[in-house]
Image (cartoon, rainbow, N blue to C red; front, side, top):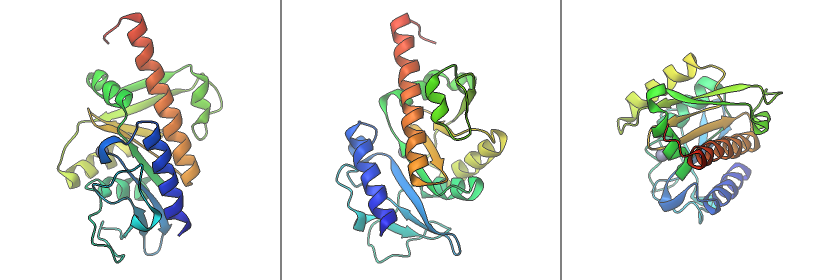
Length: 206
Ligand SMILES: [Zn+2]
């Protein structure tokens, strides 16, 4: 399956960059819309060694419909929420050091404001470095249905956002294609790391 090979390749690349260590993070892509079928990374698998045949097929409720014994990621409900609310074709979720640090550092502000960087132009629809991207931060939780509701509320409140952070947890982004979703993660990870390193050089703590 082409979608599964694509996701496995993205997982390997992100793992090599240190964004999916210790089996963390997860990836999904739409295989078909009616009825909805999502190729989803299984829980507890090293993302650097993820093979295409290990990708699960799940339905619109997060139930496995392929012949796998594995368990879908706990965060499948968040992927499904984003696919439904944003019409995304792929959803990617990373646990990098920098996104984890900034998701905590800016939590009291409700999100990270990113502006004035050339790399912002890598986000779909952004034409100038003068763009202001607000990356909302959602308090982390293990209660997935409730967290999926909060994600839905955040997506409708910030309808121009290209991603969001879960506090002390990680980054979500998506795209109309898998390539676009991968580009968005690369852009946002670059920007968060740039901002984090800048704060460190300046000796600031907030
Ligand atoms: Zn996660």
